[in-house]
Amino acid sequence: MAKPRQSAEDDPQTQLLPVMNIMLLLIPALLLAMEVARMGAIEVRPPTSGAQAELGHPPKPEDRLRVFIGTDGFEVSVGKREGATTKIPVRDGTRGPEDLERYDFAALEAEAAVLAERGAVDPVVLLDAEGDVSMATLVAAMDALRGSECRLGQTRAGENPPDDCHFWNVIVEPGARSG
Amino acid sequence: MTPEEEQAFLERKKAKRAGKRGFAEEGAVLGMTSLMDAITIIVTYLLKNYGSDPVVIAPTAGQKVPNSTADTPIQDGVPIYVTQRAITFMDRRVVQMDENGEVDPAALQGHLIGPLYDLLAEEADRAKKMAEGKGEEWEGRIILVGDQNLKFSVLVDVMYTAGRAEFREYAFCVVMKNQ
Image (cartoon, rainbow over all chains, first blue to last red):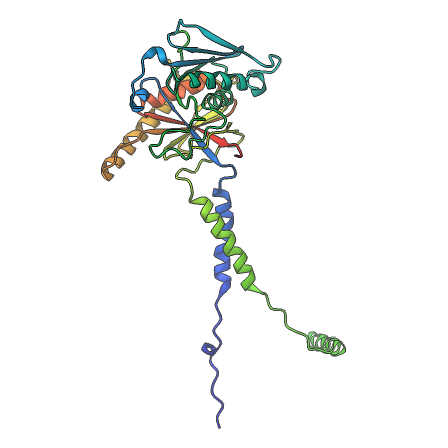
């Protein structure tokens, strides 16, 4: 009896090498495109954007919280520009203006919490700073004013922000202090 | 010894060694399946990470983005990279900074950064047309990817310039702190 002829089709084998080649090219490409650190965003508004109107209750101008960041500390005031100002001095004046340890962010957060507790002011803050103040200081001040426990990430779908959030709507208004 | 003789000698030696151990010498086969499994898992993980954010922020060399407790994800927008050396937009170094980290005075007209304004206005026109074509409203969002030591005065200049180019919304890009 003749032995049946064995063809190449009888022994199917998947060609994995081309797939492996593509995969090994994909890995470095994706690694390069991958985020090493998780990026987030802080929404800020210019003075003329009508941020207040978006909140649904246009505030009286005297209700606004104003914070000025200077090299000598924070100046917090509510209401008109010439109104009473609470000064929060720097914590460690020996450090440079770009050093976050220089500023007392805990005191700023405590002040924001007290003002928010009173409920007399809007969650809007007009932020101003000296020209030399660093972006890291600005961001840390925004964090303190918003509240360190504030989590806005889950409340973007038209919900009210949690009670832990104090002043989360930031308007960057250069010259807010000097008027 | 000719190469053929040497080959035959090695074969005999191998067979003798295998005989001593009591089993036949096996041919080495590269196990591709387990390797494929591992690589598939890695590629899937990287693809998932890659596709999670609408905007890929890739800070320029030497740039340190400030840390923040903010947990709001980045929304779609046009990134502007601002370091103490230069302002980069659309992979183009638009403006050089001076040795103090301020915008080159030659590029500045008041608060307006001329070369940046030209590119932003062009981008705004293009984006508006695209939004019109899709029947959507143009959001006009700028993502400011600033260095942590960036001065407030430079930040104000960039925001002013973006505002003049009809961008209405601003977001500061930050690195989310571990929460």
